[in-house]
Length: 257
Image (cartoon, rainbow, N blue to C red; front, side, top):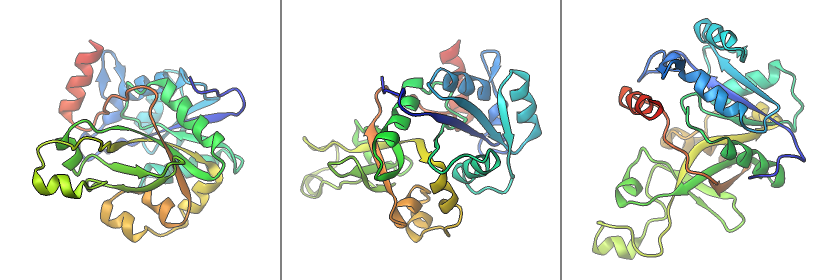
């Protein structure tokens, strides 16, 4: 368990109603509770001082208020969850060094321990502006899948690059065959949980989209492009997949049932 006794942090859960693949996703029922409530309750089991749902839709806000949660209304025009977080931080007038953890609103099984872990990692690593998590990639299919984001880090734990491409590329082994990962290669999948300091979010929203970010469609690359380090560590617990599609939703309902 990460030690969170020496610092404080808040969790913000971006919850857009108009998901392109699953409209109304935050309010989808999972074993008698809306998904946003499932995520909120997991986040409340972490050491966070506050858990806040950031939404652009009154239907989501009313449901969150109905189960006793804290909600912050945000613009419907945000390009990303990071932009939404910055608006919350500005509305709450948070100090520049306040740590905020972005917990995706579609991860009803997010382990509270990894929320604590990513916040503690940022608190410990003052050279990093952002902290995030990863996990090993076990199969060559996942390694070659562009929907699975890979990360390469240096020995210190700071990320060198994130990509949808398979990195690091095992040149000699894959020249012979690509049926399995070669022995010794340990690629890592990026897990989309982030801890930020509030002040850096103010810079993020002022920067134009970086060229590498535009091509990879990965907003974390904007931080690297502008010279801000991202700390990455393997998650202390397995992080089950989130809910992007109707199939994911049915799988989640079966798990809770």
